[in-house]
Image (cartoon, rainbow, N blue to C red; front, top):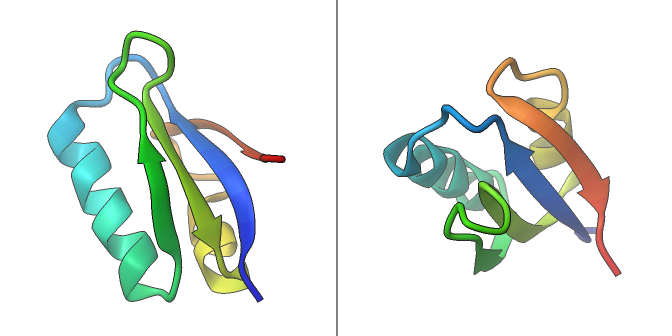
Length: 69
């Protein structure tokens, strides 16, 4: 079962790289909810499956992943 999370990338990560991660989330059964443009946050909100979450945690390009309301 997917749960909502916010995925925030480090400041130096480009939009193209984030696009690749977003595509990977969907390949693993997740669903994109919102893409942040980099002015507020550099990342996205998504429904993540356990497999998606595991693949993102500990990634060097990601600053943090936290549950969303």
